[in-house]
Picture 1: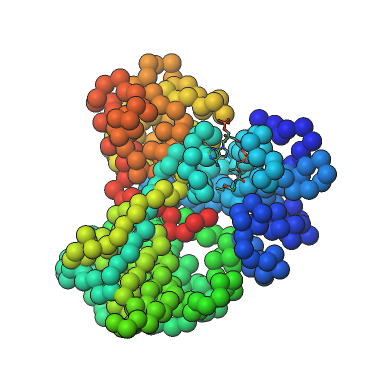
Picture 2: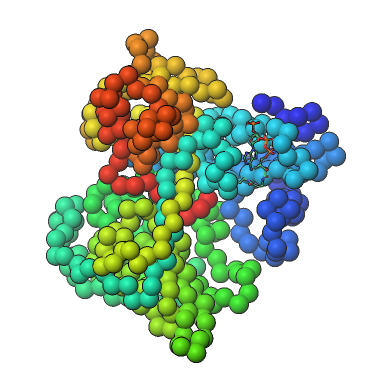
Length: 441
Ligand SMILES: CC(C)(COP(=O)(O)OP(=O)(O)OC[C@H]1O[C@@H](n2cnc3c(N)ncnc32)[C@H](O)[C@@H]1OP(=O)(O)O)[C@@H](O)C(=O)NCCC(=O)NCCS
């Protein structure tokens, strides 16, 4: 898993930026001039990026990783490396450069104390061979203008009961042009809170990764547009007593037809902290004048809007893989989450690339215990016979709680000694809320 002869790893500096973007434009078929791309804030940090140079000193390949110091797991969080900007110059493909870059990424992430690696896959056929499993899915939705929502019931989620009076305060909305100086902190604060306490349920959403580095915040919050002809980004902010409790950024594309205006609204994250805020946000977004259609880029597969709609068959929905996970340090990863049911099982794991994960592991945990303190899960090596046998790719797919071990077994990807062991693993590793990242990294 080393680079082919003549190629070497180097770390970029800011002086390499134009060269990196020129190389990357060739890899991803970018239509933008490099001079325009150079005006965009760079999301990755040079210290976490790797250039592969060929024998002539030209860039042959590149990858970087984001430092996610609190990547949400079921009921907890973990240090994760977010693999990104992966590419190989077309003339050097299929000679093992990606494989060598993945091994280097695993080495660097492990050195940084990251127990898992996570990514979004450009093509879903690439990463399984390296032990990544598709661990989260999202739904891309198209709504008709004015799609009606069921009325909000007066019940209040448990974790909000102590704040019930405040959640019954009236909500106000602001619709304005998005301005990073005004809206960055608002968005990031609501986004983080929404992942930790989904809709006021008190439960977190695994995979709901936050933009924790200054570079990621800068790359996510700017108004430079390389696509002419689109309106500037707008934002809907829902507030309660002047405190933001929901937001979405959107752009409209107008289309004037003889039958009337048929504009389209393209929304980014649609994020709210409680049911009333969500109801107000969606009702506003779905009824903007001069439009007939609303698309929401990525929503969790269990986003409340899907059940809140009167007629959810009217939505166009496409389910797509979201975050892929690769467990790098098995005991650290399996200890850094909660389990939804009690578990005491021996898992026999195969792992070709990282043999320290391979072998039999006894996993013990109490429902919703830990992940820290006296009721933390225990994950230890054992010589005891296996209850369940699976590859690291499948264990990684189960990790965020959105994929069922039983469904993988039904597909021949997991083998269990007894149906009870399979049921125990499936229920314990599941999580009440579907994992999802709201943005592509
Ligand atoms: C995808 C890409 C990085 C692969 O690089 P590469 O150096 O050709 O890959 P390698 O030679 O190391 O191949 C490793 C394995 O992956 C497989 N593979 C590589 N690219 C693949 C693809 N697009 N689809 C399916 N399998 C692929 C190879 O067949 C090889 O399989 P094997 O080990 O079982 O024989 C490169 O083709 C590329 O830059 N593509 C465009 C940008 C892109 O898609 N980046 C990914 C962003 S998430």
